[in-house]
Image (cartoon, rainbow, N blue to C red; front, top):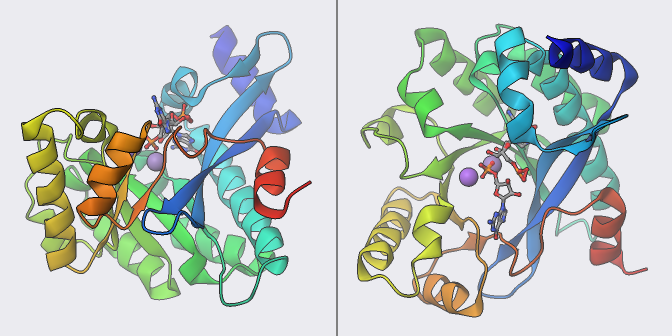
Length: 255
Ligand code: G
Ligand code: G
Ligand code: MN
Ligand code: NA
C-alpha cells in the first residue's frame, strides 16, 4: 500500500527515467536501434528496476500513465538522436507494452500523438509485445494492433519461444519482428538443442519475412553462432548494457 502511494506520487513528480540498450546488426556491428527500458528513481530507495514495480503498476492501472510517458519520452529522444544522424540511417526505438495498455481503446491515438509531437517517423517505432499477451488476446486487441500497423509502426514479439503458445498466431497477428528469448541464446554456443531451436526460430523468421533479434548476447561465441546462422540483429551485455541517455549519447556521437 505504501508502495502504491509512492507509485502515484512518482507519476506526478516524474520520478521515472529511461535506459537505452543498443540493438546491433550482427553482420556489421552497427547500431540499428535502441530498446527503451524504464527505471524508477525513488527518492529514498534509489533506483528501482522494472520487475519490482511494473506488476504493481499493472494491477493498479498506473502502467497507463507510466507507459504513456515511456512512449513519448522514447520517441522524443530517438527523434533527437536521428536529427544528428545521416537521414538514410535512422535509429529505431523499441518500447515494451503491457496488456493493460492494449486493453485501452485510446492506445492507437496515444501512439499517434507520441509520433506527431516528437516528429519520429512511424516506421522508426517498434512496439514490443509478449507472447502471452498475444495468445490471451481479446478481439479488440487485434483491431488495436492493426490500427497501430496502419500508422506504420512495427510490432515485435518479445521473449519468443517461452510462451506455451501455438505458432498459429504468427499468421493472424501483424508481426514484423521476432525477439529470440535469452534462454535460447544463453546456451546457443554449447548446447545442441538450444542451437537447433535458435536456428529453427531464425529460419522461421526468414520464411515469414520477419526480422530476428537475439536477446541477451553475452559473449563472442554466442555472437558468431548467431551471426553464422543469419540472425539479423542482437542485443546484450556483449555490446552494451542498458545505458543512461548521456552514455547512449556518447556511444552514438562520441564525447
Ligand atoms: O533491464 P530490464 O530490467 O530493464 O527489464 C526488465 C523487464 O521489464 C523486461 O521484461 C522489460 O520488458 C520490462 N520493461 C522494461 N521497461 C518497460 C516498460 O517501459 N514497460 C513495460 N510494460 N515493461 C518494461
Ligand atoms: O523486454 P525484455 O524482457 O526483453 O527485457 C530485456 C531484459 O534483459 C532487461 O532486463 C535487460 O536489462 C536485460 N538484458 C539485456 N541484455 C542482457 C544480457 O546480455 N544479459 C542479461 N542477463 N540481461 C540482459
Ligand atoms: Mn523487450
Ligand atoms: Na525479452
